[in-house]
Length: 318
Figure 1: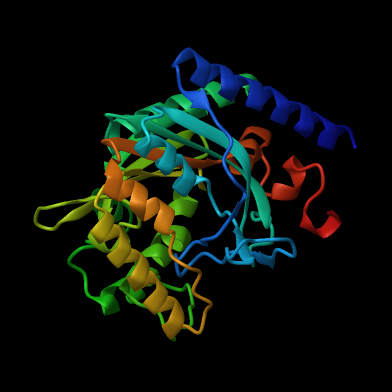
Figure 2: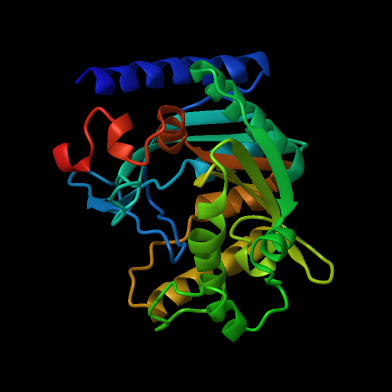
């Protein structure tokens, strides 16, 4: 019992530290809706939905629990609100286990006039401020996605054939049915590269394959890359950030492509967020944004690989 109470007290201290961190940098805390007319179209993320029983005045009764506060935060940015963050609960269906809980806490923030490389460094500052609460510091290792693959498993993720990617998994046995190139790349990260990260290191990885752009802009080149970064603390993935896409037409095309993939996989296709697209068309300022898993950060601070150890009550006891 005392360990769980200690974890809850550490969570409270972490929240206070995060709020002070952003207050000192004039980044405003906001709260945005948990229920939305639109869901997340990402084929690899499942959204919870529910039916509203009250008066809707013609609006849809089906509402979706947010998987992140990204879309409403960007709408605020488009209205001219400026640098902002949200610290709150998000929800993902089908994700329960040792490192996952269907509801969890996310910290997401946006910096106007910055790119993904600048924001990656600020993310490291956030993590270090958190680790200071438990008298820890870490070494920072920064690399491109391509260099990470080359140095870790001697594979070029941009040029290697799909067969070479599958073979690089070694003795990791995966059912190949329905898997595409990006799935094999993700599996190499999660099964071969990520587990080897030292616990006293933060790894910052940037410039992902253009096919893994999500809501990030793509930088032309040979090859083109998505201006995206991820931050790992030891073997735990903590944060995912973007130099944000500002093109409404391109974003709509990506949403529709996601919906097509979901349809091909027999998955429900949540409605596209037209409010976000309208905000992008109105004009999103040049900015970068990042989402950080607070429970994952607490797991690293407590030295546990069980998310239940940092929650008051996990899904099995909720």
